[in-house]
Length: 127
Image (tube, rainbow, N blue to C red; front, side):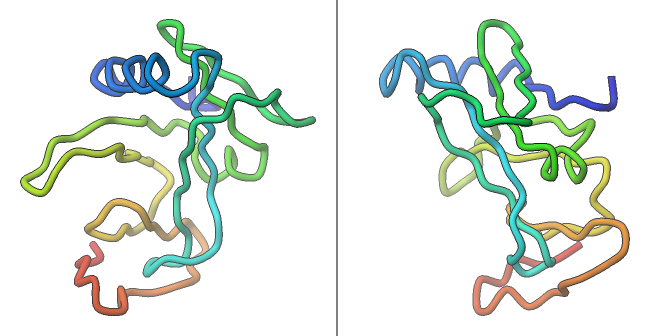
């Protein structure tokens, strides 16, 4: 379904471990904010509070994911994944709505533009 966000199997496994260690009743909150080298950036945090009015709550394999309506407009159909890289692992968002993204995976440009490359020293390598 396009109007939702899903989690990869690896993300579910990593989130389950984090939630067990950090906050038993927490959900993963994801959002989009202005900024980043490509114009918009992703944010993620464990949230043990109640969803705010208008938030969408998705549940997959016992893991809850919360997103506000504005962010869902930019991220509908996305997959949250966990990847291992040379310098460590982390969560990454595969967003079908991104028209370009930063090599670091934390910044993107949606349809309609805004932003541009130039990570400010990070050398992300926008694609």
